Length: 193
Ligand code: GLN
Image 1: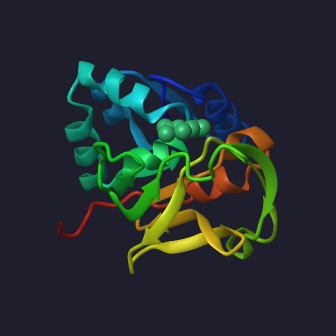
Image 2: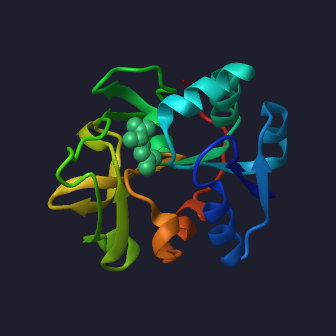
């Protein structure tokens, strides 16, 4: 089964290209009904407030929670990570609550709002190059959340069950390891919720 990339707003084309490069079939998702044709979904970076506005056109929150309950995998990057989080600050806004983390929007401040750096990512086999663009900061993680990469000790790539999130843009550096880790996440129905 293919992987989907939410194509309402933001950096979806680069995610689709990188997933195709690692051999995945990719479907761009613009309607909730299209979720039936994919095993996993990337929520790309962009602007979370713009995404929330575009999602008013259809019952996206119910559809995405249902997709997760049916066993689908989810990977949110930057604005997409903000959408998945349980708690959003600076300012607070609605989110899916599928990942037990707190995120602060634009958490790196104005001085360093966009930068390129190298992450410590032993779970991915070594350092990973990463671009941060007006990125959120993960300020708290729940006990069930695994940290796959850190920047200066802080979590920047996390996974909880079938839900993965990166506060950076893994599609820009062109290193496919982060997308491969997502593609290898097994879809399976949720036990109890
Ligand atoms: N600052 C954006 C937001 O709050 C996220 C930026 C990004 O996705 N690159 O939604």
